[in-house]
Structure formats: structure tokens, C-alpha cells
Length: 290
Image 1: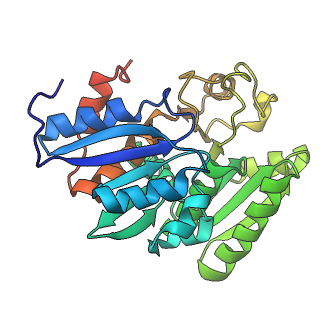
Image 2: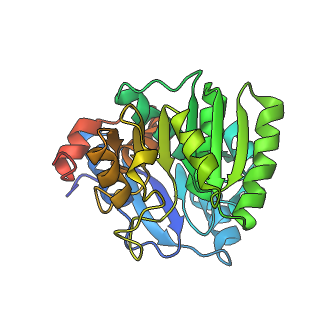
């Protein structure tokens, strides 16, 4: 517990609904305490109706910034002064920085995923990856991977509203980056097998594998996962999803979503404070080393 908070401390928020389940306040405040920097991070229940006033509050109260989570990641963009290329491409923002009243929108979700791969010594630059899903997490990863230099990305999703959105984003990425992105119907299992076999990384960016779909996997045939494949899952609870269990049995290297969560938070802290987050310390304090 920090007992030295005074009038010089700056407030950073988290705006989402619902929000009480979030691990972010614990993680962020653990880091600020360790770094001995004058910041406090608090969660605020903000739905889409309250969002415009909440953004005004950032300016009026002089918050250093705010994290943004569902259901506000897309809507918030229209209320900000500047957007990074990743936000412009994806249409989603999860981080706001307040610099003397100028609000800039970032998306650190994809940054966190790419940093997780780097820390695990997994090189995807100039190579091909396959992603399952087309929601917020998937979109952030696709955009950041393309901007960072991944050569080819194949996205599989059921044909729904998200499929249409990721198709539009893929066209922008194909025109504005050196990466080629294609979107394929998840129902086409033959193409799924082929694309996975040509990839260095498979990423599950759907909710399949967590409650209420715990114990489920979009990949049920183990032979679709060659042993030299790296299999990642954005889910961090449970620590080992059904997909990761299948992949591990096949001899694949596996990574759950804890690293992505920690490194996207570290990217936020760098934006807000300029400091490097002590990730190993956070893992120890939050029980993520086991």
C-alpha cells in the first residue's frame, strides 16, 4: 500500500464497462510503486453513453492519460486529437496520453503481442503467421505485425461483421505496408491446414478456450500443428487452453496470453511515464512465474 501520495501525484484511469474484474490496476500500481514514480492508476466504470463526458474529464482534471477497454475502444477515437498509425489502421484505441491538453490515441495490444514474441526469441519479421479471429485483439495484432515487418498474415474467422471489418483493414494494410494480409473463412479446414503449415506462428485471438468455452479449441485435429510451429493464445485464464494442450502434445512451443498482457501494459507505462516496466518483478508479485 502506498502511503506517500501527495498533491504532486498524477492520475491515470481505466475506462471500461464492466471493469471490476480487471487485473490492470494491480499490475500498474505495483509497477509505479516499484519505480517510485508519482502516478496512481484507478478503474472507472464508463460505458459508451458516459464516454464523451469521461474524455472531457481527462482534460478538465488533468489526468496523465487513460487506458480504454471494451466497449469503448472504437468509439473513443472520434474524441481524440491525434491517432497513431496503428490506431488509424485498426480503428481501435486502448491507450490515451494527455500531453498539455492534447489527447493522443495508441493501441498497445499489438505491441504487447509482438514484444512477447521477441522476448521469447521468436522471429516473425519477414515471415508468415496465421491468426484465428477477427475481433479487437486479432485486429490489433494484425495491424502491428504488418507495421513491424511481418511478410504475410492469414486471418481465419467465421463470416460475420468482424470478417467484413478485417477484410477492409487488410486492404488498407496491403496498400500501405510491405505485408500481404488475406482473410479466409474459418469453415475451410483444408485452407486452414495449408496456411498453418506455411506459418512460423499460429495465434488464437478468439475467446474459444476461456469461460464459457473453456475446454474448447478451434483446432481439434492435432495433425494440423507441425512440431516446429509456435502456438500462441491471447487467453491467460486458464493458463493453458485446450489449444495449447494439443499443441504441447505435438511438440510445439507454446505461449499463453500473460506475456501479451504484461508487455502491452509495459508499453502503456512507457508512453505515460517514459520508464521501462520491471516485468520480471511484476510476474513475481502477481504470481505469473508458476
